[in-house]
Image (cartoon, rainbow, N blue to C red; front, side, top):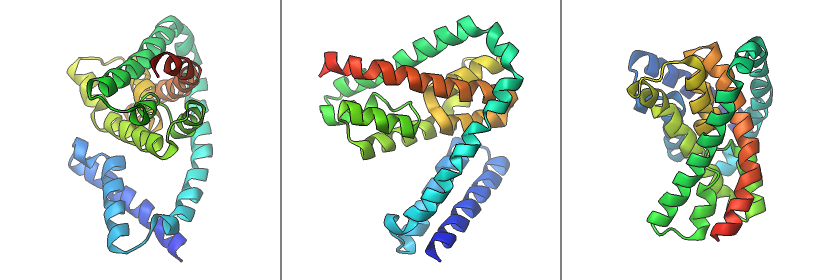
Length: 225
């Protein structure tokens, strides 16, 4: 019963958050952020532990597979656009991936964080399944890495579009590329709301950036630690 309750709770809270963000648009009403906060509060008040909630989480996470695969449809439909901007896309992915890793390392060094935290920050912009696998290779704390990734995705979803607007970046391809490279799946969910092109490009950028990061991070870490 707790599993069914948890699934219905998650869906209900997310729909409520979607309603609020449509009526009161704000970074604080971003569905992923707001629904996460509400669910945590409800679980604490209801005395439902994470272990009790975990089976529901596993079921919903499993459904992410087909949802992610479905991103291939808009990518295929817009394949000519990808070919047209292939040079800019590869350059943007490379610079964006390197920049987010460098920013994380500079932040960690500037705050004098130990290697325990530094290792997790290097893969903060990669989707959770890939980030945790990289974490195993570089001997990082998997739980901490997952937390960093989720927080990064939330920040990207909450403020990514607004920052792009601030810098007057309005081209759908550029917006999707930026969000997917930095904010992985959570950001992509927001990019899809902007339009098909933004969602398709963000989904592709998320996957390619993850592959690229998985190759370079283990080598970078060897030089830093």
